[in-house]
Structure formats: C-alpha cells, structure tokens
Length: 140
Image 1 (cartoon, rainbow, N blue to C red):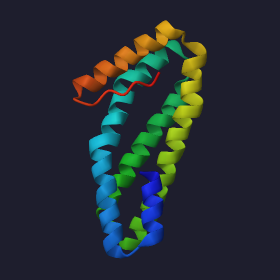
Image 2 (cartoon, rainbow, N blue to C red):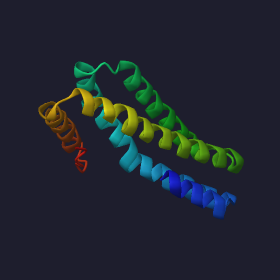
Image 3 (spheres, rainbow, N blue to C red):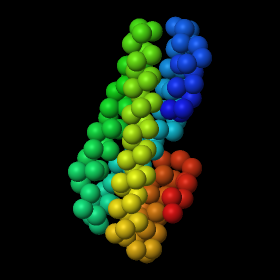
Image 4 (cartoon, rainbow, N blue to C red):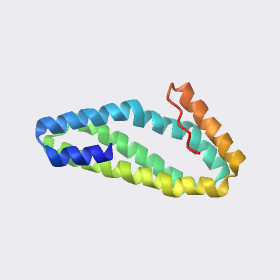
C-alpha cells in the first residue's frame, strides 16, 4: 500500500485522484490493516509480553496503530492539500511500522523463543485471526 500511495501521488496528485487514493487506503485499512492490528493487540502482543522483555517496543507498535487509525480517519474530511500530506505520512508510517516489526520484534521472537514457543505463539495468533474471520498467514 505504501508503494502504491507513492506511485499514485507522483503520477496524478489532482484532487479527484487524491480522493480516489484516500478511498483505497480507507478500504485497505478497514478490511485488512485494522483487523491485523486487532489480532496483534488481542493475541500476539499479550503473549509476547508474557515471554519477552519487549514492553517498550510493543507499546510503540500500539502507538503506531493508533496513529495510523487516526490518519485514516482524517482522510475523508481533509482538503486536497491536507490529504496529500496525510497520504504521504500514512505511507511512511506504515513502512516504519512494518520495518520495526520485521527487524526488531521478529528478531526478538526468533532469538528468545524456541521452536515450541514460536509454534504456541503462532497457534494463539491463528486462533485470534480465525475468530475474527481473517485469513491466517504463517509467519514462521
């Protein structure tokens, strides 16, 4: 999504195109991103708090979630100029968030949980996702 935002903004940053991009971002967020956040916050993060020394990192990731939710909420009522800025900021925030999860959080998980621990964590996340009706993707 972050790459698509950048591409769209470079090609055609007209008010009409910005409204279209904002709609796509909002749809992506509602259908995929926000449910992903909910699975992380209800299953993954609580489980990690029990087994890893990662509270500051998890707190920061949750703060990213709230920030991205707030940005998406502001998109619909923003002016074209504000919308372009919000879209850029959202794309950059999404990139940072993903990088932080992949580099810092997953490294901690891989370094501090053995295979059995990772499998148990995966089961908890899968169960939460299925309960929410989401597609389960294996991380490990």
